[in-house]
Amino acid sequence: MANAIVTIKIMPTSPEEDLTKIQTIAEEKIISFSASKEVKVEVIPVAFGLKSVNLTFVMDESLGSPDALEAELQKIPGVNSAETVDVRRAVG
Image 1: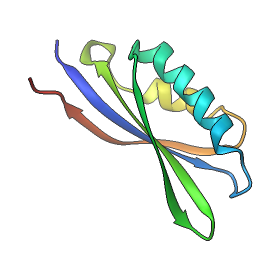
Image 2: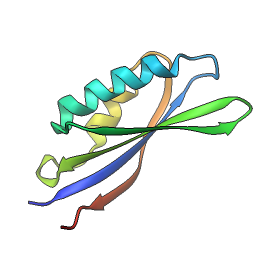
Image 3: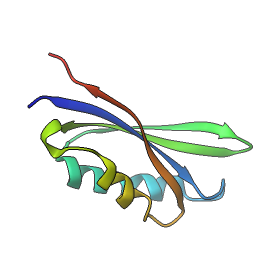
């Protein structure tokens, strides 16, 4: 099987949420799910002080869909939603 590059967008419940805490917990869950050693994190301004946390990582396609991971990320305190926004097959 090949590897897939996945990006998940996490939206906090409010601009006051601690994004560092959310990011740390999310990275732990991603590493546990995918066994990926690296997670690229981007904090992106959305509107009116609200920012999203976008996490990009590599996972083996044999793990299937990242839907189960999304469900786990949505359980993090302060998270409004977690959505897979991009999945690509890694070539090379």
